[in-house]
Image (cartoon, rainbow, N blue to C red; front, side, top):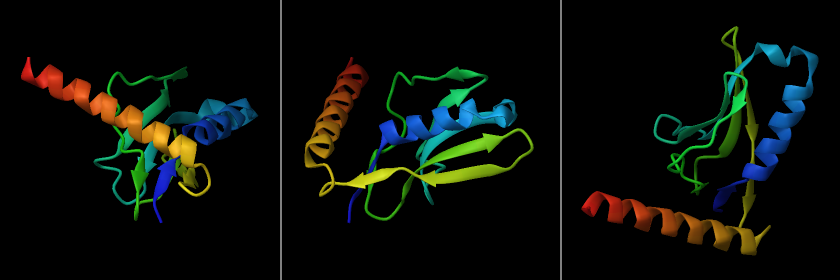
Length: 114
């Protein structure tokens, strides 16, 4: 089954974590594909601020690597939380994400050619 990264769910979870009194111990948060995070890792929060990447740096879907939110703490610990949906769960959002990805990749290809 293909799993799609659920950015909205990840952001909601992180907002709840940041509202907790021990949130000052959070170093950063990232979206990853578990098991492939070296290549698929996008920081979304660090240094007390939300981060927006100019280029999509994390694949949004996988058949084998579970999309997750990872919260890294200053003491070296981390919390991994699955954040995904299947195409069967939300076919319209899955299609929208594929289209956005294709558009971003086309833009990158054009920039490379210039």
